[in-house]
Amino acid sequence: MTASVYLRAAERRDAADLAILVDIASHGFATWLWHGAVMRGLKDTAMEQGRSRIRMDGEPGAWKDATLAEWDGEIAGVSIGYELDRSVRDIAAPHPAIRPLLDLQAEVIGSRFIDSLGVYRHHRGKGIGRALLAHEIDRAQGRQVSLITESHNDTALALYAANGFAEKARLEAVPLFEDSKRHEWVLLARNMT
Image (cartoon, rainbow, N blue to C red; front, side, top):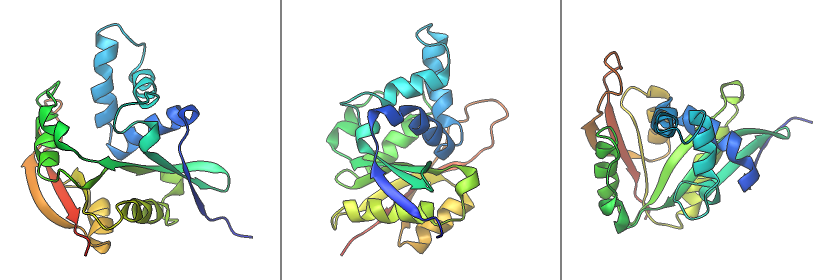
């Protein structure tokens, strides 16, 4: 019998895997953001902060918005999606690097926004990312689906294009470090008809 992907709603107890997968999906952007809690003396590690944030009940992008993919009984990937409402316009960017992301999100208010989609490296190439993406599209129930990715993430851009997503806008990313790879944030949307 061959293994296959199994999707399930995340539970609060999955928060550690969720934090790792969110960081994988963001190519380290999440741990950079979470490291602020370490600098303020609130947490010992960025991952501890990520786990704490994901365990929260009322925050968009936390465990209640997550779907986990399992492969052969092991957590293999995650998608986190939610409805973008007007409150995104009221969010104060805690750092200039966040501002372009919020500005892009403001362009797709009312859509189902895929905040994160990530798969552990050793599980890639098995159709897990495609299954999670299809799940998020289904959850939109006919509404627009949107997401943001990096301009140099060719694998993600190809996956999204193959699933009907088209570029809606892009903004230059604020570099996190002096030697950061320069890129743009690309807003993609899939219009449902």
